[in-house]
Each structure stands twice: as C-alpha cells, then as structure tokens.
Length: 272
Ligand code: SAH
Image (cartoon, rainbow, N blue to C red; front, side, top):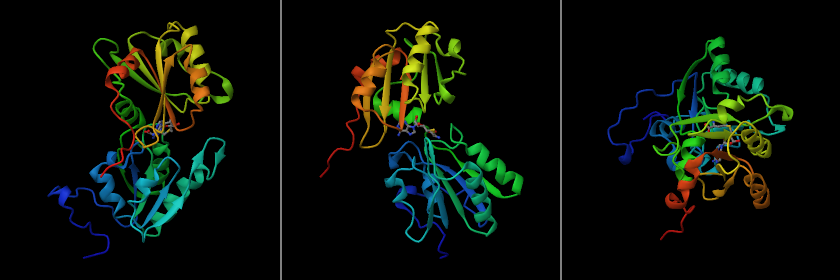
C-alpha cells in the first residue's frame, strides 16, 4: 500500500474518497473552531494524505495532533499586530510547495471562505496554474453558538443572522451600522474583541435598545471555552473585568437570553 493511501477506518465505513489529494495539489482545509470532533470526515482524510501542512494559530493543538508524524509542518501564524508571515508570502509558499509535486494541506480555523482569506490564497494558486481543492469547515459562528447554548435564529426572536467582521481599521467605523442595528436579527462579530466598546456604542447610536442582550465567547468549543453575558451597555465592562482574550466572538440579539435555558456545554469533562 502506498504511504499516502488512506488506511481503512472502521468508523468511516464504506464512504468512498471522492476527492483524494493529488501530488502537486493544494487542499485548503477548514478545521472548525477548535474541538477536533468538529472536523469533517473529508478534512480528516485529507490531513492524513498530506506531505506538508501549513497552519496558523487558529488551528488547535488537538487538531495538529491528527497530522501524521512524518508530515512536514510549517507555521505561518498570524496574530493581530504580529504578522509572522505576510499573506503574499503564504500564497507564494503554497504555490512553491505544490510545484515541487508535493501534496500540500493549508489548514484554516473554521471555514476557509469565512473571514479566512482563503479566497485570496487560491486566487494566487489559480493564477499560477496550481491545482487545488477546498474542504469546508464549521465556521466559528456556528460552532461557538451551539456550544454556548445560543441558537442564532429562533421564530420568536430572530428571523435573520448576519456575520460581520468587527476588525475596525484605526477606530474608523466603515460598517453598515443602520443595517446591523435592525430589530429581530442576530449579529455575530468576528474579530471584534478590540472594538467591543465601539461596536456596542454604534449599535445603540443607530437604534438598538441599550438593553439588547449580547454575549462574548472566548475559545468556543474548546475545553477552555468562556462566555460572558450582558447587554449593549454592560458587556464591554464585563468582558474587560473578566479578562476576555482572543479568539472571541460577539453575539448580539435577543436569542442570547435563551442561553439561560439551553446552556449544555461544560467544557471538557473528566472521563473514566
Ligand atoms: N475562518 C474562521 C474565521 C477567521 S477570523 C472561521 O470560519 O471561523 C478569526 C476570528 O474568528 C477570531 O477573531 C474570532 O472572532 C473568531 N473565532 C475563531 N475561532 C473561534 C473560537 N474557537 N472561539 C471564538 N471565536 C473564534
């Protein structure tokens, strides 16, 4: 058996591999928000076929532990204000590795096409004539809201849900605040921790009641998940007092109140 043939797994049954990773191909793989059980079967199988893996700080250690030992790992991490590798260099590195005929896996937290710059990475590959495939992942909004006991929509409270980036360039607000401040919807802010106070202020200034429920969830779906609940007037102070750190997701909307009844996840439970 070739080293890169996928070993038969009892739990994968007879599901055929439809898109094996080819030599010289890049797979852009979403790994979900942290809990390794939220990987898709396809992601796990592709990871096991890799010869080189590029990853960043949003890919959890538990997921990196699923990468076979002989596979080369390249850290291309990006943290706010501490860019380890520029996006252009990552794009170029992916092309270069693939051109060497290797099976390349680019791991991305959540889903590669949701605030992940995955589109930019494969645009470069497409321009360079490099073969690629994309494996979707559970985006943070979906995983984190489930594990925090906050349904993003609910017939009584929210008929729409918006995902938006809260990364506000130099404090200037170029978001469509009137649209975000409409009633009967849920707004999920990615990368909003630094701008939390400004986000809450703008939503109130554009018409949402200051008492609108809001939550911030740190490291959702992992064993370190923490949730701070409040409303648009209290959340910034509470989050600061609790020392909330990245990665954190902000959820704004009346659905947050359901958590009182629906909170089910107690982090990693000691077992056995
Ligand atoms: N492509 C990713 C998002 C990358 S942007 C996805 O689909 O999920 C990075 C932002 O995602 C973080 O700033 C944070 O807002 C959010 N995020 C990612 N993982 C998270 C987690 N486990 N808990 C809370 N927020 C998370």
